[in-house]
Length: 103
View 1: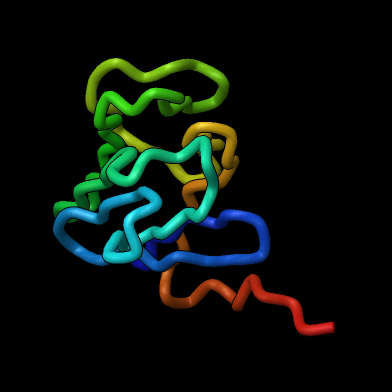
View 2 (view 1 turned 180 degrees about the vertical axis):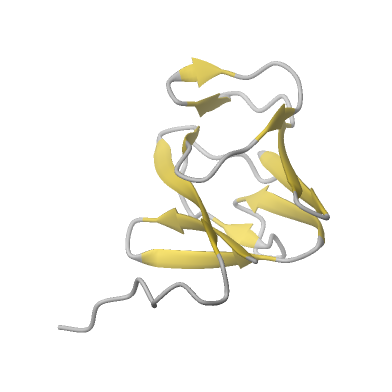
C-alpha cells in the first residue's frame, strides 16, 4: 500500500512513522508558502491507519473544508488544506496503474 499527498504537480510519498508537513526544509512534505507554518501538521502512519494532526499553526489545517482541532483519520481522496495550500491524500495499492501522466 502506497500513501501520498498530491499537492499541485508534486507527489509526496508518505513513509511509516511520523511525516511532518511545513515550510521547514527538513519536513517530509516541505511547502514553501507564506501561509504554511514551519511545523504546520503531521501525518503519523501506523499499519493501515493514517491520522492528520494540526500543530496549532496560525492559518490552520482543514479536511474537506472543515478545520481540524484534534487528530483525524484520513481516507483515500480526502482534500486537505495546509494554510492556503490545497492537496489530496491518496492511497494506492501496489497493483494500481501509475497515476502520473507524461506530456
